[in-house]
Image (cartoon, rainbow, N blue to C red; front, side, top):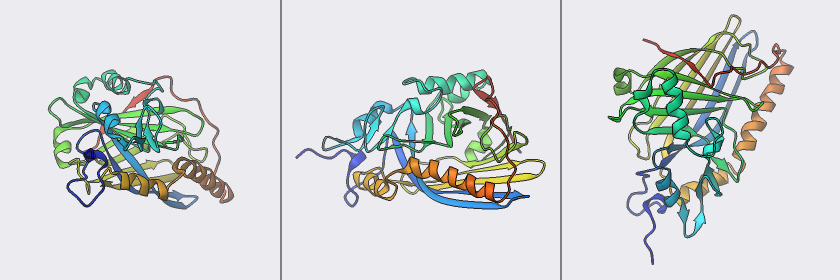
Length: 288
């Protein structure tokens, strides 16, 4: 009998930790709105942390007994597709990321691995309100973070922030970016984002990650937070997460529209969609 690859080994015997290619993270998203209209929501989801420099390894390990439990640019119970990210190209996503950093004068910040945290496709469907790229220097230290935002109109825009070596060592990245992209019809295109991010540490089960975003405007405020814990990427984990979230993308999209209806009923002011910027990414800056 052939030995099962580490990537899809059932828990209980030996290591089930993902050593190359990716990790699953299970956690929750919380939104809290203040100002004239108060609102709060919380829902549990899961994400895939993908090493964009190791996609062939992830693809090789994503099969279990011939079944594509985790596909890469192809079918699977869960799957990662490069076309769901960046500018929609079917391949070369890491080149797109490096181009965005080069545009901001941060080419050295992505000379090493690039790790993408995003929800995977589930039974072929996906919607990511936020995807986070952790970009590393050639020596392996975190050099920049790229936050890619998607709205329900099909628009995308990114915010690129450099990371100092000191912040990388402390695993806390604080930054600011002016809001330049329409996300919600109940938030104006004013103010700016304060990011506080704890990037991934060791690629082991139990690793903690968090992304906090505060949007401040003249008469409104919104706090969004993502917290998650790494799970061993095994067949058991994949099946368990799928059974808990069999239509993850529909839950996310449905939740967005349901919460929009609740905000409308509360009397939140409505703002028409504005076209996205004509450039794919805006520059942020570190906060001391």
